[in-house]
Image (cartoon, rainbow, N blue to C red):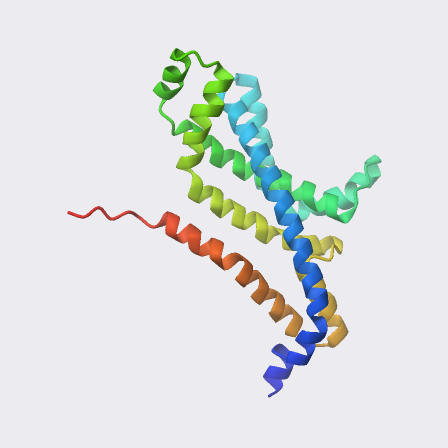
Length: 222
């Protein structure tokens, strides 16, 4: 009975549900903004790398390695607490979006780069021979094929980007984890944290299953 009262108290769940729902809505907002921005920036970086300009590629390599190596939580704290000293104060929401877009874009860039390089060079030559410009060949021939080749990796990185929105609690942004912590403090029960964990699971499990299906090896009948 003590276990139920501490971790699965229905009265506490009902009382804290409005707060958890607000946090869930903010988590969804973060994900809807961060994932497209990070993916678009990553694709832009990958396309620039594909042009094979020596000095540009060195800068791209530096960008990608830096933001992949930098822990997103540390990056968020630096942006939120450090930039004001440079005269660039950002609110909690903007700082979180910026930190996670920079971090995730490095991973998206590497995934897109691998996808673009998996396209046979002859595809670009064939597209150019039909009269397409270099940009048209990239956008209509190379990018669609490259993206299709790395869909499972893109989905996995999308999942990680969504999960990382929970670090926003470090700057007191009331996303799902933060609101669960607030509700825990108000009710002196672990139930809100358990509820938040279950909400994350329900929210992300369909994507996990979809990724597993995409990564399942194809068995060719004999």
